[in-house]
Length: 413
Image (tube, rainbow, N blue to C red):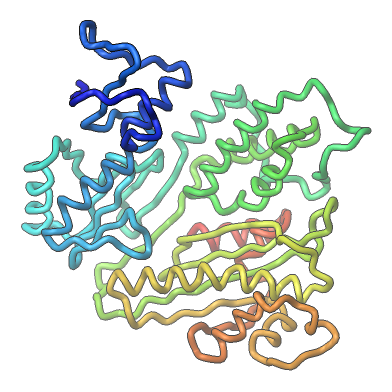
């Protein structure tokens, strides 16, 4: 149902934002017509309520929810505006799906009754599925997996019966950009983009083990080749063989709220790893209470002239996320957090602690010395680790053999 009020003359620049969205829909040949008997040439209707599907609708719903909950003591988190906090209760908002987190009891029941008093709410009970991610409550841990989603994308692209492989990518599989010698006009660009997009959601959800490979393949969305198609099918074959791998979050019945949480981050870089631009790849992985909570891989925006410089740039890339996580944990009530960020490069570690200028460091951009300032004032702690213990290694390069299996086990479990 659409509620209509007085008509306005057909001058979009004078209409309010809701009517302007209606005008935008009409001009894109998606016809939204007024009921018979109420149409007047040169005039349009003003929407009193947002219609599901308009660009503005999610924002209007969000503000409607916030305006309702704020008087009851809920506070919008600065860490993420879609997270609302009230003492030990948390509400995660995704469009019109609300996930409630907190201890079961009268307070949680009161919150449900409060929402039901204002909105049409369906209580689905304990959270077992969230945005395609399955949540399992086991004896010693909580496990997240996307096996059902992986089956769906395998069927979608006709690879459900493919032969599984052990690693996301063969180390000898060279991935470079299209040239005049390897370009193929018969390559389905749209299909390639869909396959990469499907894999990206897997990476974001529960699979840090394919982060680097998918990030690398996503750099060729405009001109993929048969070589790129072969690589991305290899990733699907890897998911076929590892569909049941779960991201584990162990817990203990003896855990007390006063116990200190440990936030540890790992950062790494693959110097000049891109064969086309010779840029390096930055990667990081963060673990909270020994559970992986965040990971990312990204090609650096400029060419590094040495391994220490590439590692130092990767360190600065991870520090920004490091600070964001610290602020979020503090908002959630954890003020005394043991935290550290580790790198496996002596040069980068030295640059972060020592303000000396040398031939290999004097040309580094000022922005990357942000890390050193935070180390000096005690905001962050940078540690040195070994390459074999650096979990972020899996986010910066192709790894095969036992090294890959060990890193994957340390991250997922």
